[in-house]
Image 1 (cartoon, rainbow, N blue to C red):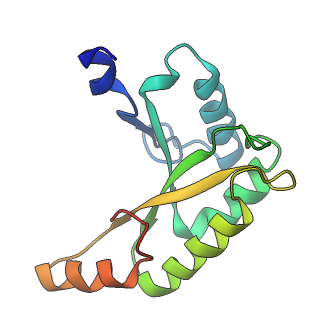
Image 2 (cartoon, one colour):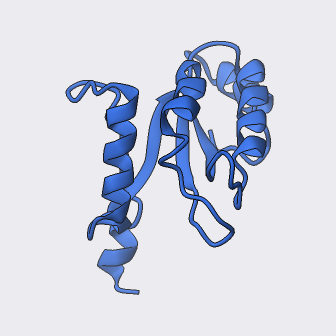
Length: 136
């Protein structure tokens, strides 16, 4: 692998739900799916979604998510602004429903959570409330 390839791989997360694009969920997911098929797909990272819209993502993107045992799942980063422990439970349920090889629901995994904290102690507390395989 060239060093430039290593630098660019997964560099750009897709935040189409947020300004300036402010796309609706379906359009954002359609665009993400299209970008994953494009020649620049190596640079594309995670789809960013607020935890409060994770169910909407499932409903809107069910037919777009990859399927089959050899398909590469969509990687998601969720934004959590409140109850981190409850959000961790939602993440685990989502990941079970969309585990690799899922035919009915499509393959996706939340592996990153973006959190907001105002103190170092809050960061430690929030990190402890997340499932251990989720990167904060």
